Amino acid sequence: MEDKRLFLLDGHALVYRAHFAFITRPLINSKGLNTSAITGFVRTLWDLMTNQKPTHIAVAFDPKGGTFRHEYYPQYKANRDAQPEDITIAMQYIPPIIEAFNIPVVMVKNYEADDVIGTLAKQAEKEGYTVYMVTPDKDYAQLVSPNIYMYKPGRQGNEVEVLGEKEILANWEIDRVEQVIDVLGLQGDSVDNIPGVPGIGPKTAVTLLKEFGSVENIIANADKLKGKQKENVINFADQALLSKRLATIDINSPIQFDAEKFNLDPMNKEKLKEIFLELEVQDIGTANSG
Image 1: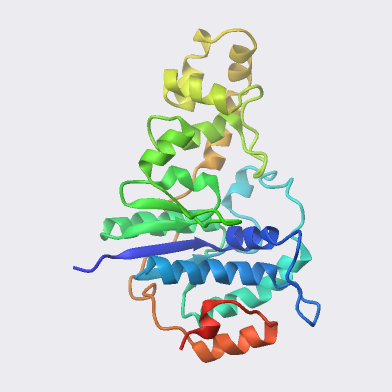
Image 2 (image 1 turned 45 degrees about the horizontal axis):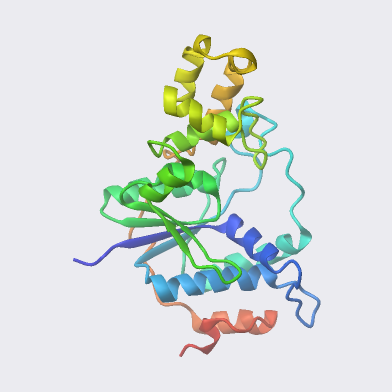
């Protein structure tokens, strides 16, 4: 029986990462277009396809506009800087490139890419797939299971990192993978504007979880805490529960894993050559293969 390997790529996170990897020496073509994000993204994709030999693959992107999290917490991600213009321009080219690779792009209105990837990963796992979530985003750690891994592309000469349950438990110093959500709920997340509980950072979160196991249980046992910590857990209990909810990836978003649709099919080399010539993007394996 063939080894069924599904790779799900977190599109926006990988595009941002590629753009900033070249930030000190951006790749500018003769038309003045910054092709850093495009080149970096395609290199990651090409490297993955060449070395990892996926049988199935898809790229997920965030939809335009808000998501269901904004409905109950309008300030979610409100502190983020505007998207750099170079990324906005790159995003006009990246979906057509993915299409020319014959790789499906998935997007679900009102849901973030991590919800879509989480949903597909859990469905595919039930169908006997080994799933790799390709992302630099730490929040995905909560989804890792015996057959679902985080795949962090290498950067600046570093090796690719593949994180399974053992690595997640060690890195986060927790006993169960789902406690990733409790850590994020307690410490908050400045990147996503998740408030957390004042005065509780990663170390304190881990210590409290070792003793009480979950955010809910810490709140229920607040009387066993002391001083300012006790006061904050009592006063910010609702905020802690809200933060945990915001940090939870929804694995029931309205999308269905379809093995046939996500099958890795031969790429359209002519189309890719045409796009790469127009962008003057070089040094990518596709340009030289066949």
